[in-house]
Image (cartoon, rainbow, N blue to C red; front, side):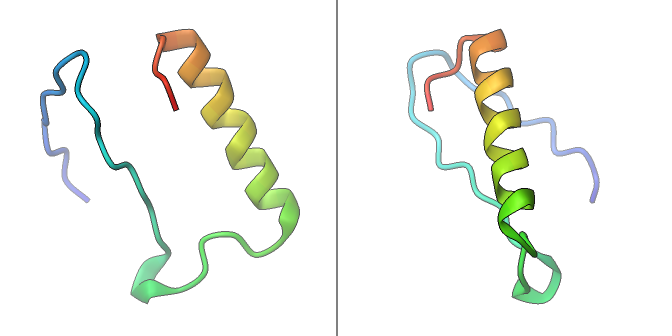
Length: 51
């Protein structure tokens, strides 16, 4: 997927989502999902993004 170059303004709300190719599963087991949540927590804290 090409880089979109979106500019996000501070203080606004954004809907961030993801899905698998062909609308398939994104997480194949609970461990995949938990790993994703840990990454979201880590980087939201690092960059000061409220989730």
